[in-house]
Image (cartoon, rainbow, N blue to C red; front, side, top):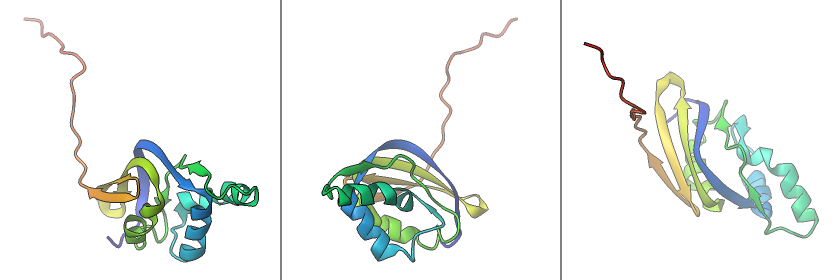
Length: 130
């Protein structure tokens, strides 16, 4: 997809990245990260842990962002390469320019792109008066 991602909804989030891996991703992909991304948001914490001799410390992905300029263009980098560094489970829904919606599940470094289906689930029935 070449359009940009406007917004990301996080459905499930129990995911982490090692501090040193955050810095590796930034070094290797700094020119391919979109305007708003979760990796750049983790940079300061990652630097602190690496400087404190804790490069394997798992930093929680608190706010999964991948939107704005270049987000669609570099979406494949997220799915094919960056996702390999993610430990745990995260499921997100992407809202694309033009109205498309897609999903992504990442579990222990394995990414699966998904269709998104919405459904209504009744909370309670309302009786009609005669």
